[in-house]
Image (tube, rainbow, N blue to C red; front, side, top):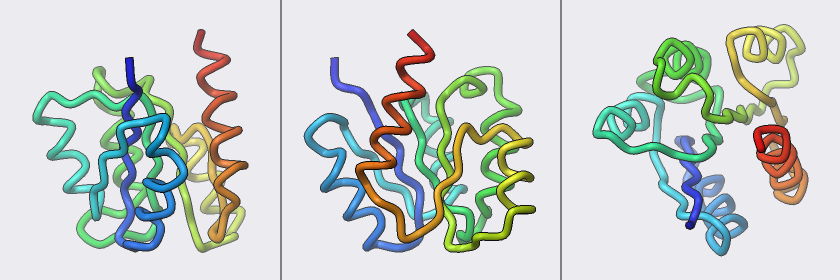
Length: 124
């Protein structure tokens, strides 16, 4: 069965890269901010993995992590954050809040794929 990747970013170029790289293996669902993503989840959708940006309008990445992790349904969905900010404090804050990983933009799509595969391997 095809896995679903929920891509949450307000930058169209990032969504296009994620769709291009992961579109062969995953059904890629694109949302422009955390609020749109949460609404999509609340409609009963269940992604296999979420890749989300830190700096988004409406609901930032940190608020998004807290919202996802406070939900019993989505608590265990792998969540990888992307950020243009290399601030270590932000990274630590995200990881402590429940993100599984944190990549700095611009990122190598192959590295992101390897990190996602590692998470799935551990979950098996």
